[in-house]
Image 1 (tube, each protein chain N blue to C red):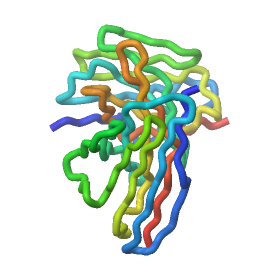
Image 2 (spheres, rainbow over the protein chains, first blue to last red):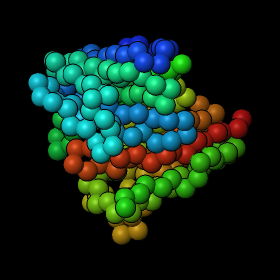
Image 3 (cartoon, rainbow over the protein chains, first blue to last red):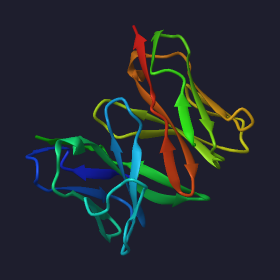
Length: 117
Length: 110
């Protein structure tokens, strides 16, 4: 159980275009989803926390107008990279949170590799 | 500033030996600490969680220790196998958020 999927698994786009990445919790309802970005040989960096039905909370330094997050249901969150540029090329990973006792456990998706040409 | 440091970027060991990875942190007071495995091009997979009031946790060939005085966690893989080759990440839990270290890549030679 507790499976999280992402789509697409990889995407190549031209500079200036927008790209949407979907994150789904397949067998549970997640009130909170998280979006991370990971550059090669670096740690996962939290970009934003997304709660169903409300606006996402962005980490310091992350542009909310560039990385649009929509969490319309308890099983789906989307990240849209608007006007993508080569420096946005990265590995984007989402996670979905499930309360387990006194702890909110996060289950991670397989990631989406974005390459902006 | 807050920092999470994993001892080395890479660790090469012989099959059957024990791999020991270190995670040190500063300016955090985590209620929990987790270890994850990440394979190339994949998302992290949860391995173990240890609470601040626990000294040690085991799961099959994995062992984690947590010393809140030293602000350090050790992660051991005993009787290592080539299939254990991956990057291992430590993560601190605070305010319902995870903060990750950069990871240590373990390569187990047959």
